[in-house]
Image (cartoon, rainbow, N blue to C red; front, side, top):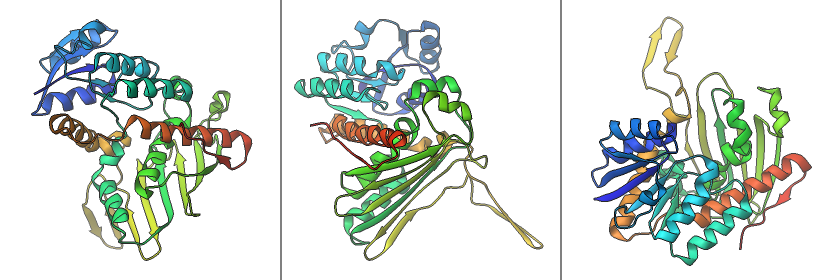
Length: 333
């Protein structure tokens, strides 16, 4: 049994807490939050113990791994503490909103040989994993064009937007990671354009709610990503990869597969209500991967370095939104 400490008892901490408690090879030993009442509530639900003492969280005699699901501005400090203690870490993205600071933390973690994974959980979605396998097998030839869609049902609260880092770093970054993973290539440059169509006040934060992004891969292949925060018909996410000899796609998923037929009309089930309903299962699969790697000494991924590359693409895309130009992507070295 891997003894886990969960850091963060908010919404996403609650998701991870339930998955940790249900995992047959995990003992959810500790729940940490700066709000003791919130930590206690989550711990009681899963037969765990709450604490506000980070010394307990990073005690290698009592804890085998940590799951960092706290606020974004604390991820880096918790990763540093895990590296110092020699405790493997599974961390929500991003490592830090400041790329330079994130690089510093990753380099420190590397000096301590920290086993760590960033929870880009869409890699563990069943359909996307199969799509990546097909591309990697060469079944559709060389990748020439990847089309990606990420369309949310409703605007997040403005308080969230203010600390999110913007659409490129918060929403689109998942697809920057998927583009690298699926193609097996590091994009060389990016062009991004966007508008504030759903919420004009986003302009006050230098952000957009509707965007189109083009990545250029080595050799000239292209990735096109359209992202919107609000569409009103559910959560719409899908990927298509065009190769030199064929095509593979992961289609939009509906909430059900029942069709109702009547005279002159067919009514199908609609899309999932939100992003969480669509990708809920991938959180469990990502945790399975991490725990299995700990138990068997297998490779862990996405790694901290891979997360830095996705963030570097997001930084270049954010610059492009302002400059109106194709921007080169500068990866940390």
